[in-house]
Length: 347
Image (tube, rainbow, N blue to C red; front, top):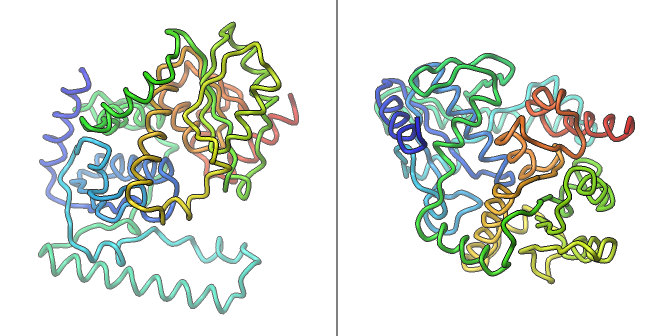
């Protein structure tokens, strides 16, 4: 089944379900975290025969139309504004909240009660607007450690198999974005064969230890004979560093010299024109990495994890064995950080 047929089949299958879920994308996380959560919601809906609809009017990665600023629509979209406030993430359990020693219990309890009330209001508003019960984000319970069987879409396998199928349905640039991405890629004048990697800086340092540029350089030398390497980075100083360390390699990037680390909270408050420019450059970089002969990335960085999941098993993780990757790919960021730390310690 080719990609267009798969997308058509998804729309037909999705619209045949009577129950409905409205998923709010682009709430407060980085793009690929938000995208992954959306894929999980789609899989949940397919498994439980629930029609999936999207609300993205306020998406933190968009600037005008949400999802359609960059991508082709793949399902029905809704525009009721109450989703902005009342359709939010699932709350962590009280046990998980108690592990956070940074905030006093009374403050955590007030916060949980406040969010619980918002969720209840969301359910009531959804029922009043759509005249039937509708599932919202916080009602989603997704377990990636299972077998997925959706024969209408050719899905019969584990999480990575199902994830790859749904990226075929959802990862389609609209005409304007595709054209802009091609122009950016062409401006680099990359050769036909090249390697790619992501070297992350910015706010990721607050979540897990970052791998130094030297680690990626060593892996590039081990995994490929390519002398042309495209680097996705959010800190131009890291790009300058690899150029200095290995001048015999031709290094390429779309990172601008004024970028010194991506911080998601700053990006989401960026003016419309600049956000559009930054998002287009970012997506163009992802497409360039998709076309690389070899890609090396960390399991702790969103873009890298997406690419590693999409192209598994033909991948080269920087901080995880190929054998352990299926398990590691299902873990939240702290768990992946532990896997990566242990792998680096052993190697």
